[in-house]
Image (cartoon, rainbow, N blue to C red; front, side, top):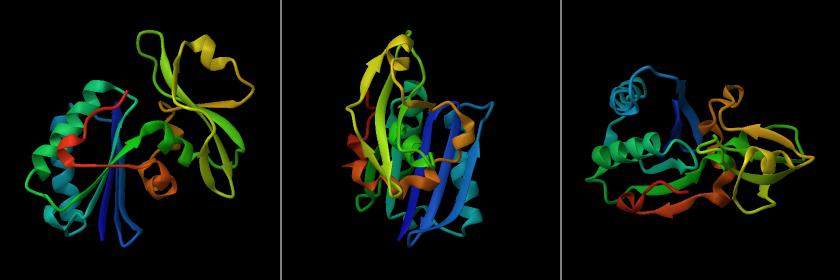
Amino acid sequence: MIELAIDGSGAFIDLSVFENGYLIYTMFSRTLKTHSQFLVNTFDFILKATEMELYAIDRLYCVAGPGRHTSIRVVISTLKGLLFKRKDIEMFRVNSLDLLAASIEGHGKFRCQGEFFSKSAYFIDYEKQNGKIKRISEIKKGSEEEIKKTTLNIFKTTEEKFRPRTVNIHKIKNYHEAVNLFDLNPIY
């Protein structure tokens, strides 16, 4: 089984390819080009580097928010264009905060926060036990002041030290949302 995980929810592209559950390729890049220009070329490169065909992808995980709405829309539109003939592909919508939480090691309870837009950001509180991630709050939207009202450590989706994150996609399988490719749209 070939799986592709992609996160384009910010000013970056983060991709990982798995074969039978094993990571075979990953990349993280901040680009000066738009996501649409960069993504098609990146797909071509990955397919050549892994000696795969586009039809070989069995499962796709796509971060659909929260994040930069336009960047997410571009990634989703590109995926729909590349894979529109694939009726058999399994598709999962992923939350960027869950993916960040999976990337954090060695913490009990903590808060993950997205980027600020219009003076507010989305956030979720998590607990990590025995390497497993558990949401301990619902997703909320708040001001910087509201988000900082906590004793928990706060981690931000904009922190590059937690990249690449898509390598951790299997750690959050309880939070993946199965969707049809054409029902994949930005969330939040």
